[in-house]
Length: 223
Length: 189
Image (tube, rainbow over all chains, first blue to last red):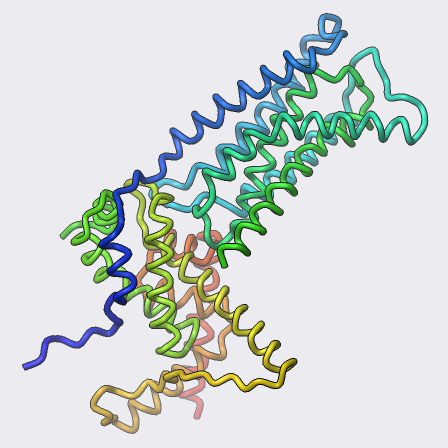
């Protein structure tokens, strides 16, 4: 008498061999990863402010404005990092698409906030080229601050969302970009809305794009 | 019986027996899901092995205590999409270079193992299959995940990468459409 027929194929030899050769691995711990990311991010901002310097008009800035703007950047960073790494209860997959879209929303909110409410003594230089030169300087500085947290977040989220790797990469990049924007708030004295929107808030988009490109290249190599 | 989450935890810790149990618990659902995507048994069998190999390589991304089913479904779906793309590229290459691609696939016929079939039952199965095939892809997927694969709404939403509300709505629409085709139209004949 034959045993009950399986309605699905048994594991292949290659699979069984891979399982037999496998070493134990520690499952992903989103809490630990989030803590590591935040510690690294705090260190990156501190180092950036020591190296680049704190804005000269810091003492003269209105405290409510500083609190609101700093709080907005910080909340953007925390929310994006949380969404990129933390899955729903009982799930493995983080909310990739939601996290990615939140990155774009964070950019839009920070750009609008910058255009609506500015404080400070310094304005952008006159002329388009000078404006662009200053904006590029801030963009590059923001991306430099974002680089380490971005790399770390990408490392944490790889393999996590097989279905939406680019959205998740975008969120991982956006959180690092928001951190770059936070560092620029304390470093860059140029306070006019166009500069902050075009250079500081754009760090979120630029970092998200960098992360998406890196994730795409990695996915293509894996395939 | 150990839960899927417990088995996955033990498998990550290097317990080979846990992998066997996990495979026996999850492979039937994954296989049905892949069969619903590919509609070809041979391709579904290959993709099942590919999916488990990917799960094995990515087991470090598993979160302890979480249900691995929707995660594995997402990996299966990605594997299917990747394979589709590869086939498309190969077909394009073949068209450009004049090569002939031969695909050895066992097409799903729906025949019973004994080969014998009641004509009325065969007609009903054929009508059901045609009605399912006529559904929009997202509605068919929602119905298969929730009704055939037995996933919860949350798991189905995660597997299809959408929201709970969307899955419920799609499954309901699919159910209404099937009912209209299979029952209402049948009665009117």
